[in-house]
Image (tube, rainbow, N blue to C red; front, side, top):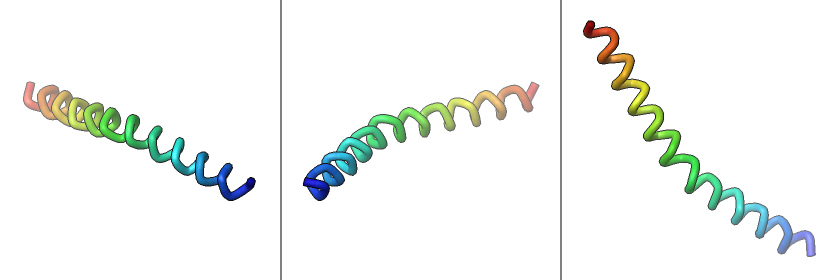
Length: 41
């Protein structure tokens, strides 16, 4: 029982990461571009 529970928790954690990580990468690149543009002015 605990094994299947931990497996489902790991699966849900990985699916959450698969959703959050690209979003964080997009935010990071947008933030870097904004900082770069603001430093140019």
